[in-house]
Length: 130
Image 1: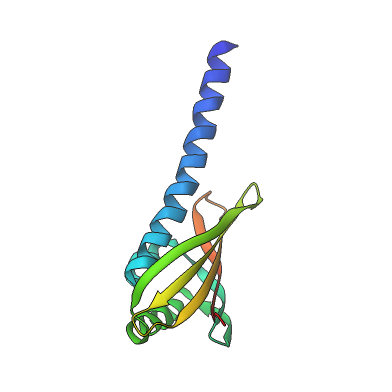
Image 2 (image 1 turned 90 degrees about the horizontal axis):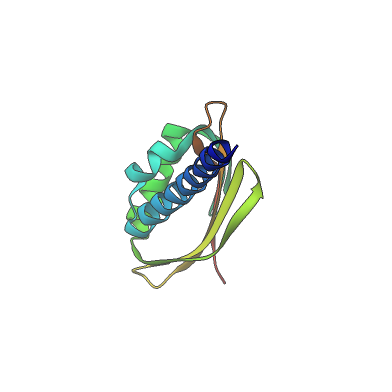
């Protein structure tokens, strides 16, 4: 029984660590303005609202949109303000992104485990912070 509890605790710690690694990697990519680093974490279809342009788009489309956003608004800072769990398989992160033009944006994304238990961004919102 002790062995079972030890194994279960290790699995839970690895799962929690995996989510933190995913969130941390995404936040690091946002901080550096690198859409290619975000790409592995994008679901095949992503619900997005980027500066009022909203809809469901493919992974390739959202990567291109993010590349254009980062090119037009290069980052000088990204700080996470809130994050957590919506459910066992769904996590979110909210941060404030500041561009080199001193523009400020709120970036919100939702990461959900897919059928293969791989965490992917399902929703991404970038809006101007007023």
